Length: 212
Ligand code: BEZ
Image 1 (cartoon, helix red, strand yellow):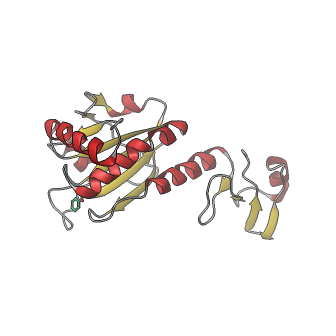
Image 2 (cartoon, protein in one colour):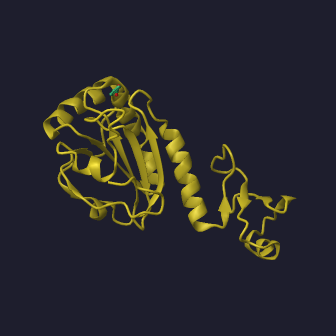
Image 3 (cartoon, protein in one colour):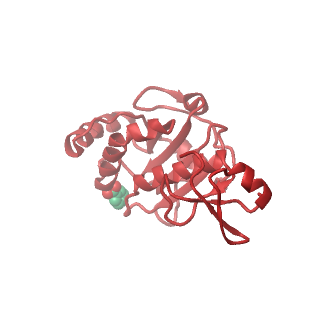
């Protein structure tokens, strides 16, 4: 299976999860989605990640994003592990986790990188838009936990740039100034960005975030 790229349709699948069987596209509905994999149940880094995502569920919901985890262990193992996640991370798991025992979804999404480990998944993240297209991918090795604040920050940029003719500069955060995309002429920029813009260079025009 070739790696999924930005702009590809996120493959649909049916899977067992801790919140019942789902058909992925139907489960996403009109929402954005984050599908992220975990190497294995009862592992320390994964335990902290799942605890954090539970705590951030409200932040994902505010952005109309549904989150779903995946590990290649069975459902009964997931349920046992969730007890530990809740206890040790002082939270309550509040989103589904796929039990991908046959590695069907992991293979479909190229989450197993055999030169790293031929049985377990790496830490993949797919951000999927309401059009079911892949908008962003991240791949971390098992030993490095992800920063879910960064994933929220990137979603803010994806959602903003899907609506307005802007891009977001280095280290941008919601509320910071944006860059007008180069396909917009100065003349159109005057109309589209009533707050004005600063022309640092012909190709670098900075404007306040348009929806703030
Ligand atoms: C972890 O989640 O802690 C982990 C999982 C697999 C390999 C290394 C670390």
